[in-house]
Amino acid sequence: MENNKNSNFAFAILAGVAAGAATYYLMNNENGKQHWLTLLNTVKDLSEKFLESEQGSRMASAGRDASEYISQKANGILEESKKYS
Image (cartoon, rainbow, N blue to C red; front, side, top):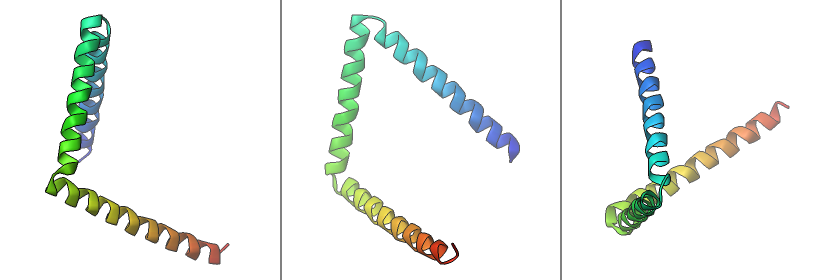
């Protein structure tokens, strides 16, 4: 189990370094900046299309429901803790 955590941590570090290097490379020249903006716009468009889709709407709704549930539980815990203060 510990080895798996170390592997995941090492992968996360490598992914971060790779993302940083790619960003530096793309932002280092004018052509790279244009590519970067194109990539960001594409990701934005895809995320908007996903949220507009039926599945995206259901996932967004489920996320809101989960957030509300967690908020209610947190408020309940806060109220309970005030009783012991």
